[in-house]
Length: 189
Image 1 (cartoon, rainbow, N blue to C red):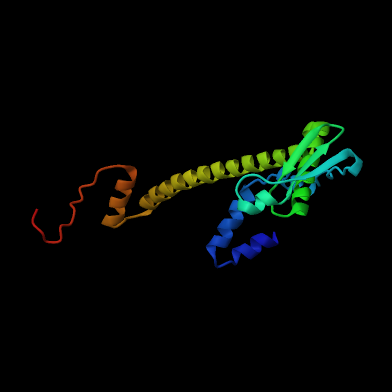
Image 2: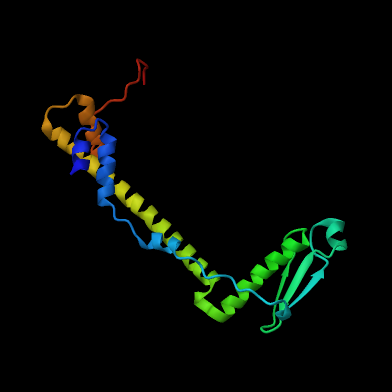
């Protein structure tokens, strides 16, 4: 009630229109609830279950990558999963990345659809679908707005007399032909 009274005294018409548009739009709460749910914690491994070895890197990087043992290979003994990382020049960073990748792979193997990676992929899929739905809704609303604008122009014509240029515009908008002669600005044709 207060909001309606406030908007009645509002001088900016866009404020009123935006309030009307927001009151018609339905929002999904499922997207908000997804962000609230925490991901399950990453698996922690005992050092006895892992075999860690440091290797020389391969690929681009020049002589430095060929001379230093900065790449990390971790083998998880119970499952036999092997992970190798050489993302950075730092041995400790590569080991950290390799442990994260290994934890994700083992968890995917053990938990399947309830693993962190599966939950993240599901959230990303739902977010993308929501964005696409929002884009479709936007263009559908724009089309409805254009149809409404044409109806408003028809109503303006019915309200009273119009000058010649407005009636020509309406005829053009409806797709009809008008007997308008293009202005040649005094030039001979």
